Length: 214
Image (tube, rainbow, N blue to C red; front, side, top):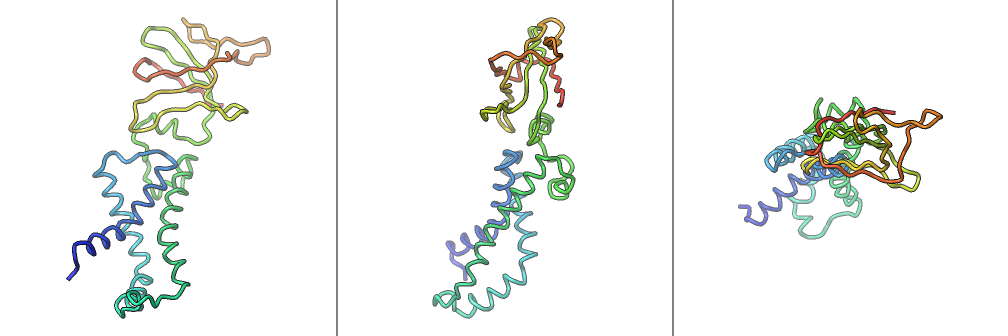
């Protein structure tokens, strides 16, 4: 008969691969799980797949070290330790790798995440890892503002808040714009005229946004 503590420990170990996978994935892309129940289902799903794949190894470890009492007696060789490390490391690595593949828009990642893993169009656009471009924003007041979604040589970069946080946008360099027509002001060489300031804007202040890649 399993004690309550033992049952709790077994349940935690059973769900650990799924939890580590989700942690690794969301550490890269953000907390894209819609809610707690959604995350629990993902824990169970990923853990079930992991345990099916590891079933031969798990059965061997159980019959060799647990059922025989060797684990309780401390009679476990050191080479078993890498298996424990892999039990933790493989799901974490897989989640991180799939997260990076998702942010780069790689097709193979869709086999694991589905066709539409991002919860909002906002996250789909700004969740791309190497996103660069120009942003034009028409505020609800009717004024146009804009700037560069980019990374500066000193490491500062533009940033967009991810799900489930309220949508706000930081543009690391503001652009000179015609506030009425929304056209970028350009220099004599054709490049966009940039200010030495940044822009922080809340999405609820915006009526229209255009993102121009490049």
